Length: 68
Image 1 (cartoon, rainbow, N blue to C red):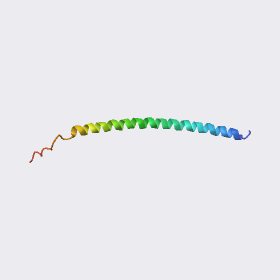
Image 2 (spheres, rainbow, N blue to C red):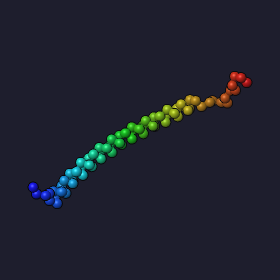
Image 3 (tube, one colour):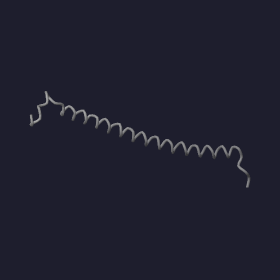
Image 4 (cartoon, rainbow, N blue to C red):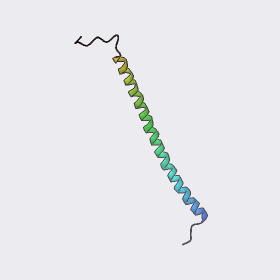
């Protein structure tokens, strides 16, 4: 059997690199989906915390405890 020519080696290498690029692209795309979902969740939680803090803010001086 003949040894692969330089062109054959380059074509094999290009094919392997194309497969690697596709794998990386899928991975990056999925990571962006996850990041986008997490960013939206954090924003929703931030809004919930802000709303809870607004409801919990005292409306005047705190009354003294009952033992006074």
